Amino acid sequence: MKKAEEIFQILKDNFPESNLELKNDQPTEAILIAPPLEIDKISLFLRDSSELLFDSLMNLSGVDDPKALLLSVYYHLESTKLKHKITLKVSTDRNKPEVSTVTEVWKGADWHEREAYDLFGIIFLNHPDLRRILMPYDWDAGYPLRKDYENPEFYQGMKVPY
Amino acid sequence: MGFLDKEFTDGNIVIAKAEDLFNWARLSSLWQVSFGLACCAIEMMATSASHYDFDRFGVIPRPSPRHADFIIISGTVTLKMATRIKRLYEQMPDPKYIISMGSCSNCGGPYWEHGYHVLKGIDRVIPVDVYVPGCPPRPEALLEGLIKLQEKIRNESMIKKSA
Image (cartoon, rainbow over all chains, first blue to last red; front, side, top):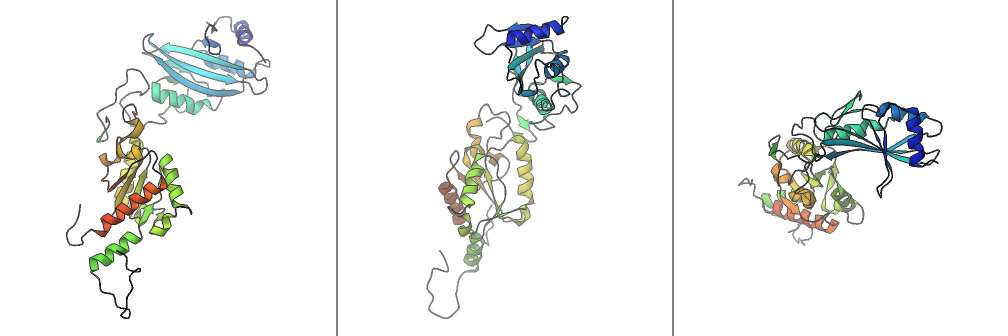
């Protein structure tokens, strides 16, 4: 069982060129901030390194921050063998939100990433099947959980607002 | 107005208006589309189960809309599902009836403002005969909704087509 600081140190030693950061000044659990286009490599290491063994992606969700012009993805990881947890965060430009997919690392990420794409419009590079998952396939009014989203007047002839 | 609870003295001949007879027959065997959406569907299933026994009103869930007389819209109707419900409704043979069960299907319910995915009332897509309020309505409320629907059918005329 490892603390977030130890996990952060292991990652820093193994990815000396990556821009990693640990945010542990908040009342929540520590958040490890990683670059969006390297998250696939980092995730693979987190899963396979014998001292980390993060075999479970508990959750993956998108977050919109229009003031900072950022779209972020949070990953909540757990090692069922070593019983430790870590939260990862990657942030991308709100106008070009691109994040590497982690479906190759955890198969369960597939639908989570489709949901983040569906509701926030985050593009997961190299995702095997990046389609909308909850909203209708022909939904063209944008991404509903973005802060500046506005409902369309009509969808297929049905009035949408109350 | 029932037929079987009347005492008849004279043999086996019953005289009734054809309209009353047919309406009585129709309202006594309302077949329902076997279809549920959200938490209201749990209450609908409880209504169908032995304690509340929907079957005593002649309500039998049918697996195809082509067998059915009415449909209970039991739960939150998303915009995606609304297109499917419309298709189900169009597949039902006339005469067909709709019970809108619960706040969501009546008017959008708790999703009335921020539910980007919810249709604010199924009556925007298909015509509703009976609205059952509640979130979700108890089985007794759904039973009353059904009795209201039976009342409506009982008073229908075969001559003048009602909408």
